Amino acid sequence: MNTRSEYDLLGNMDVPADALYGIQTLRAAQNFSITGVPISHFPELIKALAMVKAAAARTNQEMKLLTPEKADAIVYACQDLIQGQYHDQFIVDVIQGGAGTSTNMNANEVIANIALMKLGREKGEYKYLHPNDDVNRSQSTNDAYPTAACLGIQFAADNFVPSLASLKEALEAKGREFAHIVKMGRTQLQDAVPMTLGQEFDAFAVTLGEDIDRISEACALLCEVNLGGTAIGTGINTPEGYAKLVVEKLATISTKPLVPASNLVEATSDMGAFVFFSGILKRLAIKLSKMSNDLRLLSSGPRTGLGEINLPPMQPGSSIMPGKVNPVIPEAMNQTAYQVIASDLAVTLAAEAGQLQLNAMEPMIIYNVLNSLKMLKEACQMLETRCIRGITANEAVCAGHVENSIGIITALVPYIGYANASRIANTALHTGNTVKALVIEENLLTEEQVNILLSPQSMLSPSKVVI
Image 1 (cartoon, one colour):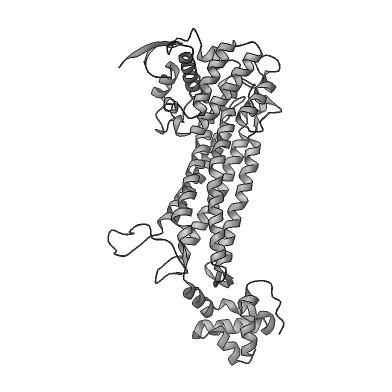
Image 2 (cartoon, helix red, strand yellow):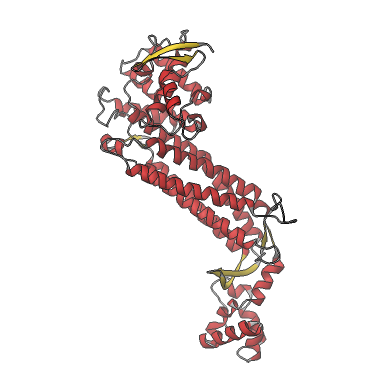
């Protein structure tokens, strides 16, 4: 393999000649092989890093800290990354020591070498354009990396929310399709009162829609960044006015409403916005898992369970039991949710582990938030296309459950009294007779009155019936 020799404070090392990364990236790749997931797994983070570097280059040019030639070359290199080129050169594992320094240097070296090629130079000829002195000018990992993370998470959220919105719309469509099907509602897995299957699916849609709004709110918190604070938030090695100007330029490049943090020292050490965002993803995961549990229960059987709905069959369910089909899609969503919930705990612990002016655990925080977004996106698309849109209802089963339920006695309580209703319910439970038949038999109400009170119009919403 052809190599080139590069030098850092630890000495010389041979780097693959065709690599756009350099010696510090190579050392990090050798040091950290924890998850097997490289930075390239999250293109939104690379795009965000490139935007940070481009904004810094233009600001440094405007402040006479970079020549126009160098600034142009850096910006052109960043544009290549923003457009999705060279992402395979981001080889460092997402979990790393050093508070993200390895990720920042991976970006600095790749951008420097692309820029050198644009200047007609060879990769590694850093005397003409240097990863630290030029690409990283007026920056530290401690402001460039978390700022890129704030942006990258927003980009990932932009990619995720349409999948969540589409799932919500699919549930709404099922709500309309099933609006006429009366079934029993249940509390604590026991018969409660009637509802429609459409109402059940509408509720699923509403609860997911709430979290679309919450994600937007969480993204707003990520618009306050510490870029310009450099090492610990004091802005050392930056000229006066740099922080305000570089954030303005980054806001323009990213089209996100970014603003400088009101206190850069606080913003450099605080992980609160990431914790909040992760908490929203946990909340959503809990809702998706609960809904998946409900789908599994409602489709249980097919002969000996609730059997009120049918999930689309996706694959044979057993290597020993012929004909068995399992609810594999909701089960996969459950497992996705458990991972997201666990990731939120990891984010919580990492945020708490910050010390003094920096949190060295930022890489794990950023990895877990981005990974949760990626998993939820794929899982929501899976649930919608391979499950929700193919669900059918067993109307006869739903009707039978209502007819045979003791829970419908609740609708008669205002007219026969709680004591009578309790007695009728107990008798129905032990004799197998229906509530309707027993009420009529005891002359508590006429058949006509019972039919009115147990009609969907009476039972499914606040009643206007007067008898």
